[in-house]
Amino acid sequence: VNSFETALLEDLRQHVAERSVPRRRRGRLVGAVVGLAAAGAVAAALVVGGSPARPAPAYAVSVSADGRIHVEVDRLSDAAGLERALAAQGVTADVTYLAPGTACRAPRDGRMATKKARGRPLEVVTRDDGFDLTVSPFLADPTLTLVVEVGRTAQGGALLVTTFVTLGPVGPCVPQPWPGQPG
Amino acid sequence: VRTDRTVAAIATDPDALEAFYREHVELVQRVVARRVDDPHVAADLTADVFLAAIGSAGSYRASLGPPRAWLIGVARNVCAMHLRRAARETRAVGRVRARRPLEADYVQDAIERIDAERATRELIAAVQQLEEGQRAVVELVVDGLTPTEAAAVLGITAPAARVRLHRARQRLTLAEVPW
Image (cartoon, rainbow over all chains, first blue to last red):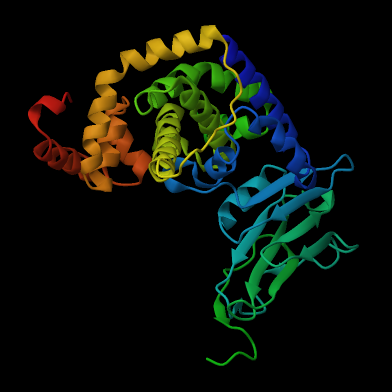
């Protein structure tokens, strides 16, 4: 192992350690690694790299000291990946990203967990291209399913995030035109 | 036992990343040396490949092959992107890259690796004339994957990969085709 390989390993270890903290703080941290590679090349590689043309993750999941699970979604893709990432934190989730102008037909099959899921288990903040979700550790319960439906009223319209919790699994999402939208 | 999580862990666990890095750093540098002949560029690309692997670790599927095959796919994408960018930038005049100085021991290793891969580099340059589908299979096989592994990396069936290899072989002159 030569000097470059050792230095690169140290930078990569630091990069990974810093990825685990909530993403809001990552901007300046990623910069530490940029010194190694020509600036610009790194950001581009993160976007386009991956197994055949697969982009960087569209989401990040982290856990704060109080056990709350923070989800940051930057792009509405890879819902299954987000479900797996939440499963890794013990949360069973059913995530659906809908085409613009559609919504899941309500109500979906399943038993609403009104009692167990009471007490603001969730906080949602929507942004133009994504959303932040804070999940109570209370939802890391195998008997509960966190249901997340994300869509837009129309192409280019506002992002709408619907969340609820069911006891046991939820039925499939049946997309239908967004209420009030023609067609 | 190899699982999806073996690789997924490199995105969050520095120790898992270190084990993965130590196992694959030579492989990544070889893949890079088959495509570029400048030690500085090779160093940049090696860093880029690991960053891209960390960024997309969640995309690894054990059912589609060993981590080595997946990583070669990542490395090929990163290098291809660099080469496309480089082709555009040769037209720009007076471009200067800020570079971190590299130690002599690395440069020596890199030059030896780059020399050793000269023939393969020429082969990969030759296959750039092929259409992308064939080129991808050829490059991955040249990088040491079996046709079946290359197929998994590209998301195509093994017979389709063999057909592309066969067509590529027909397009190239015999002297260029060692597989």
